[in-house]
Each structure stands twice: as structure tokens, then as C-alpha cells.
Amino acid sequence: MGSKPKSYLDEAQSMLEQSRPNDALDLLRDNWNKEDETAAMYKLAGDAKRSLAKSGKEGSPDSKRLMRDSLKQYSKALKLDPRNKEAMQAKNSLENEMMEKGVRSS
Image: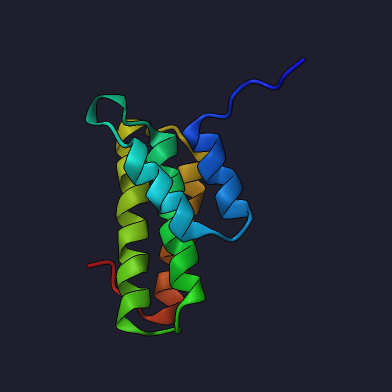
């Protein structure tokens, strides 16, 4: 019995678990389709950008920009699905982290 083919969202999630956020973002970008937008897709994009922000130099402009981009992705996910618990928790956690580091959301 063969395993069912992985969706690109599952693949992106596994890339994030393997600490490969750039690859996950590339995969999400390649498979992005305006008609098939999902909250999970935006949440994964937010996770990838947050991971990139953490791997960069703390307090650098790039790190701050990536944190803001991540927050935007989580907000888009919640716009599509306001009851998405994972996106809400990730957004709240990121907002707290940004507040502690003195990073503005805009």
C-alpha cells in the first residue's frame, strides 16, 4: 500500500519542522493561487517568516520587517478563518514577543 501524496501544505509544514523556512516559503509561493487561499497557507507563511526573523540578527531591520510580515500573514489567516485557533495563538504569541523586544507592528 502506497502512502497518499502529500499536499504542498504538508510539505511546507515538514520543511518548517526541518528548519528550512526559505524552502517552505518558496513552495508556498509556487503553489499560491488567489482562488484557493486558505488560512492554513497564510499561517504557514507566517510561521516561516517568524522562523527567519528568529534566525537573523536580533534587532536588525530585516528581523523586525520579517516579524511584521509574519504578523500580517497571521492576520490574513484570521480574516479567512476567524476561528483558527493555531493562527490566533501564533499571532498573540508574536505580538507579545514583539512588545517585549520593542518592535512596533507598523
